[in-house]
Length: 347
Image 1 (cartoon, rainbow, N blue to C red):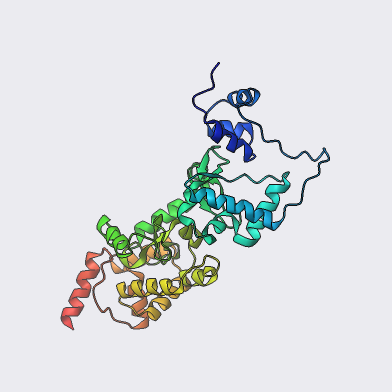
Image 2: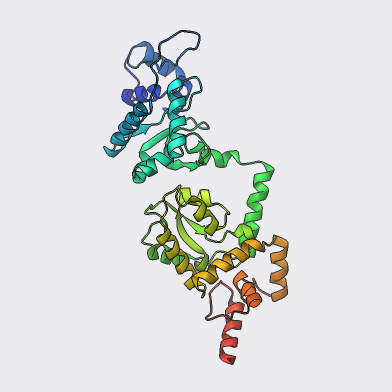
């Protein structure tokens, strides 16, 4: 009987060497687990045997230099265009326990090590097993989580999305959707294209091309909205880490950890400030005001009803501080722009 054409023996051996179980490997290769067992029985591949605590074995101590040698091998493999299989954490394995303890203490996980080695563009070549679907997937398909051993979630984004069906998460999603609809929105394809071209097609804080359209001032505050003066491209893993935090405080807390450039952040603030007709310092004060005065969905609706249109947070803040509008800002509100034009004509 010939070997199954579905299996690549080298990849299969690498998967078993990573410490993954036969069941996990079978799901990753989309075959029945007995197919894997037959390959092992025929001698085409060898099964990874974990350390048995009941059997006395003389295991050499794994030093930091040994781990750095292993990481160097990973780096060379990825640099040569090959895939690197990151072994799953195993509490019964002295090797993986020491490995992830070392990575966590020195690099904030595997993702942090990749970033510090300057091979972020090669992150897609590092594969790990998703605990949900059992597939070997690129680290780019997992959400970054610094508190996890590998620096990313155990489940891929697709499995995590499928898992989020409980009432709490649905309520949060509905609240976000309501906020998006209640706040000013002017975000067409042309606006997004202009934003991306303005930033050279990369993240404003890094040179990565895998970016999200980030609300600089999160809509969770009940302020601002989705328009050019509040949207910038941000690396997906940075956007996930930033979440709904105050961008100024988040940057200061994570600048050294993520090796972010203060000059680039200042340039980003200046750009958004100019788009909102503010100086960088005024824009900073406006951002803090949004966080100090959060609004609920009901409060936003009340403000919109009182003014007869979606009242922008920038308008409210300017009225409170006595700052006039220097020019008409397109929040997607025709009523607002007409009102500003009438005030300019009268002046």
